[in-house]
Image 1: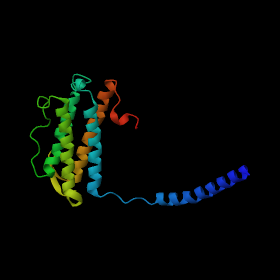
Image 2: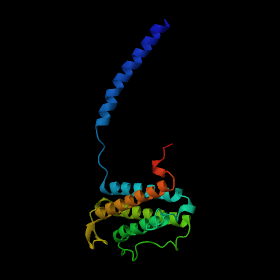
Image 3: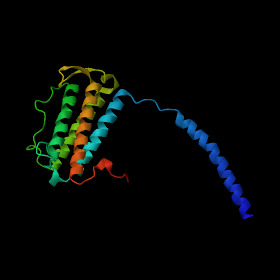
Image 4: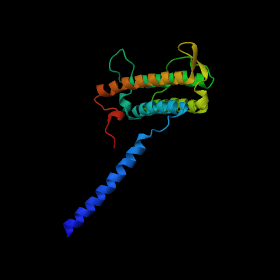
Length: 189
């Protein structure tokens, strides 16, 4: 009797699962619509910002002045560089002149907390500029301060996102040379 009930229960479950699988598969085949232009730019901007902020917060303060070779900048200087570079995007987009110097000076940002705050602010200011421009503003023309030529907001944004990704890759090397695992490479909880 128990065996017949077990077999019947198993058969009912199998029929239920067989009926459910095609429905789920059919739903999965319908792609979601593409993100709007500003949403796509904002997502990419925030993603690399999140990674760099995590590094800035995670790397030990006593290693902030570490550099793999004498010719390279320190960990803190690379974060200051990427933060300053973000304003070569943000300033033109909000109608301000590009910064007059490339990198904020380490002497101004003496502690880890100072550097972390600047990294966060630079990405937040860029995100606010992207949000303020909205979808229609992504194709607005601004002057690319590096090429001194007109460019679309989204082109300038993606250039800065790529630059931030390059800095992220460099900082991964700083982590590995210090015997550490970068936050993004750690197992997810």
